[in-house]
Image (tube, rainbow, N blue to C red):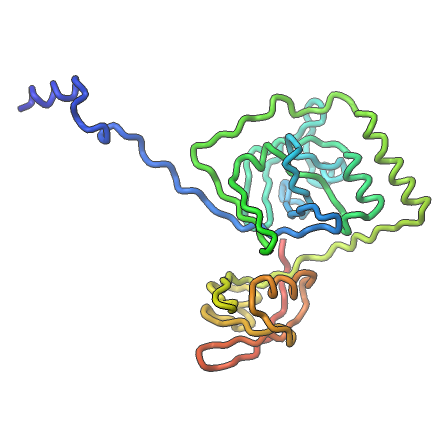
Length: 280
């Protein structure tokens, strides 16, 4: 019997499953809050080396992450050759952490110009390009207030051949020019920085209802008395029928804002007082 088994192994007659590789880790999923700027760019917030948050635009046309020189200074980055830096940590709002991110440190004309003229309605600090975006399967749904980022086990994106800055292009000279134009025109962009209001719930839309799926421990929602299964009926007398309704009401609410929230709990109607906490 032993000789037959040995012969079967040598001839490759045993099932291939005995030599199969272990299964890859399942993909991890993250929900990344975003907003559209006044110029309709997709903006997310991130911390670099624990500093921030900074406002970054998702740019599929950029080969890498680009940040401005003031941001690099605030994040205490050490610049290598040709103005390239590697982040010790890079975290997007929503809990997504990306390791070993290389970034080009440069005051881009696009960022300078938009900031100088206040076109985005918020101060921009850079862009997130291919070297980060290619690591994830991203679902863009502009009816929701979050983007879905999913890891891709076993996939290694091709790293751009050159992430560096050899010399400034002529177009870069337009940045200071646009700033001067804004000053001459009397344009004074208002970039008031306020923390995003944080609730601390997970919810789902179903048959015209917004139902609380989970309440995060010690969150503002938990302190207000939210419970899993609650149906959110209204906020400040505004009817809530979809997640989009909820997002609109809370879109510009800052930390410390208080809301009266009416929820249906079983057969009972409850009125809760919610005070928003600080988000990223």
